[in-house]
Image (cartoon, rainbow, N blue to C red; front, side, top):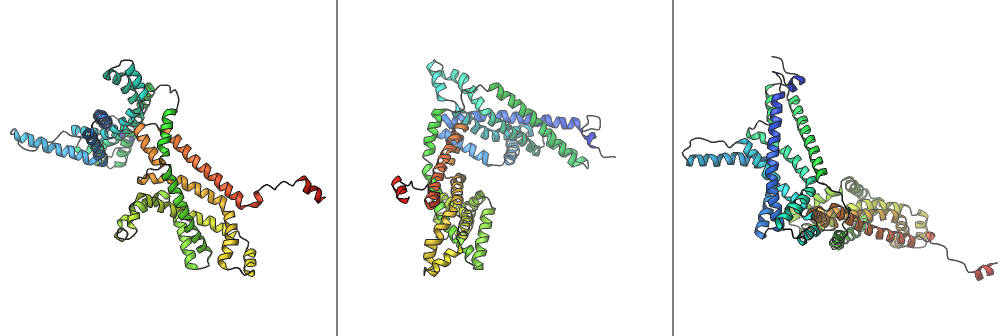
Amino acid sequence: MTEPGFLDIISFGPDGWGPALAAGAWMTILIAIAGFAIGGLIGTFGAWAKISGGPVVRGCAEAYTTVLRGIPDLLVIYLFYFGGSAVVTAVGQLFGAEGFVSFPGFIAGALAVGITSGAQQTEVYRGAFRAVHPGELEAATACGMGRLLKFRRIIAPLTLRYALPGLGNVWQVVLKESALVSVTGVVELLRQAQIGAGSTSRPFDFFFIAAMIYLAISTVSGLVLQVTERRFSRRQEGLMDIKFALETFWSLAAALPLTLELAATSIALGSVLALGLALSRLSGILALDLFARTYVFLFRGTPLLVQIFLIYYGLSQFPAVRHSIFWPLLREPYWCAVLALMLNTAAYASEIIRGGLLSVPHGQVEAARACGMGRVMIFRRIVMPQALRQALPGYGNEMISMVKATSLASIITLMEITGVAAKLISESYRVIEVFVVAGLIYLAINFVLTRLVAFAEHRFNPQLRAPLPISAELKGEAH
């Protein structure tokens, strides 16, 4: 018997796999739609519970989203399928039935997908609920609308309008999760591809065709969601809500001291370490030179985010660190962020300082030695002032980079400007206002910093200053 070719697999003839794959694709779509609808119902009530419910209701909703978003979807599907079968069997035995009763795979898969997507839709709807402007609700109340009419005419349409982009993401996840339902024996698209691959010697062709069908379903559903979004969208009166932007500014301004403290501490400590590294490179001692070169290579060659993760999450796995005198500091996110920023900026700053030190003419050092100056005095009065003058422009860039790098500290729970901005976005869904205000605050910090660097550069470089005006009397005396 000859193996089917690619065209035979996709054909709808008597020997083709086209009808079987089409039936599997239809089953996939049904599971995805059922799971998405169940998740939408759960997400609506979950969002309401988180916003308007009492402490117990909010706690239950929070526990639901935390647990379901933290457990792999495959485990949830297994739990519903095998757990449901066990429950149905136990109930059947109470009524005299014998043997094992299998829980329907379609129902188990749809429920599992719906409950897992419900946790995601809860957060989407919660953000969309908060995006509804309070003024519109107040205006509806002033017009005499009841709670039900206000929900139907104001809250529901606006919430759906704001939630559609996020729901598009959830739908794509649900569509991919529906492939996992194949483990329950439901013959959906992936299961059908597995059957075809097992009965022939062309597994790649079957799985490639399945991937293309998934992609086609995803593309068509994405277009439908885009059309729906345009249907529900309205002309925006303006991209910025000034009142909300001002409220956001004051919320972010409260996190400004932490951002400045992180930047100042890491720059100050990093500059000391950078000076030591630069002097090690120029010391002529092979061991120190090799250490400094290796240090710079490692910290300039790896992302700062990876370094933060290694320090915050990685160091705690070593018992020697946990039992050391440094553990009270290293277990705090603030000091882990400072340590990572300090080590990172020291690598870059050491090269800037080294370039400044190399720019000092050697003849001046020899002249200072001839005048009887010691090594410390030569460094303090001759080398360091000129090296600082040369390094200031490049070091100004590094300080600006460190101010921007403090935003990565939000990844390890520090509520600096970016951390507070992310929290505000998750609560309000007002991305533009929050990010614009946060960007303007960072811009203002760096503008002040650039002016300070320019002032210091002007102060340390006399040749950049404008010459003092010569009075007419002095000009006459000179003639």
